[in-house]
Image (cartoon, rainbow, N blue to C red):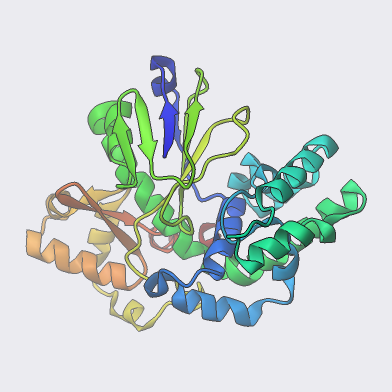
Length: 338
């Protein structure tokens, strides 16, 4: 179990990320690529992504084992600003930190009598592909991460971003309704708020003391089952947790046939009424339609990829996807779809 310990100051410094983190999504998706679970959400994505890969997995597997510890330097906080910023920060990793975390990686996955063959091989040879000068090591890693991201994450980025933004809307509503207490209580079921401690299902027993630094909540599309935190307690505290999944991701260049159903002034008004997020009842009032009509319009918009719906307590919360927001602005710009 993971226990995150809050003080009053920490509660006032809880923050919610406003976008997906490119490096967290890349690293965690690599776990999902090798995991047979979650076929409904990730099965088709796995099949499509594997056809686009060009050998990046061999190097990445040496630093991202199937389970357990992977180095903190792989997911610098700059990844929230995009892949370029994240990889620039990764390349700037200090030599002593790089060495220490790779040694810790090797020690964490030493073979024992019960270790699976794959993990035993990693322990014997895992860091071997990364021997050499610091610049060479980080350059090769950055290249492998970028290549993998382009093949397995970038084509699905609009969908990933839409799910993260939908989760943010639900958490933001909880924060407005009841402050940090309500926000922490609204997190997915594997996280349990028992003031002043946030408990979480976790593969090892661990305590994380925030010590007045607050906590950044980072929703993640590819996080599954349990949240993730940095191993190093001195790094700025980040809690990566899974978003709620309603459907499998689809590449951004395939809008699907339902988009052709999006016609008429009423539905355009409904799309505009959703704005920054609303429940079905609020949508009906804003658009001046019946509750049943609001629900039907939201369903069509969701099928067209313009709206994401997330359950929030006893209600459902509708939010715009990047494509839906771009459509309201008069066109889907490249920036809106990243």
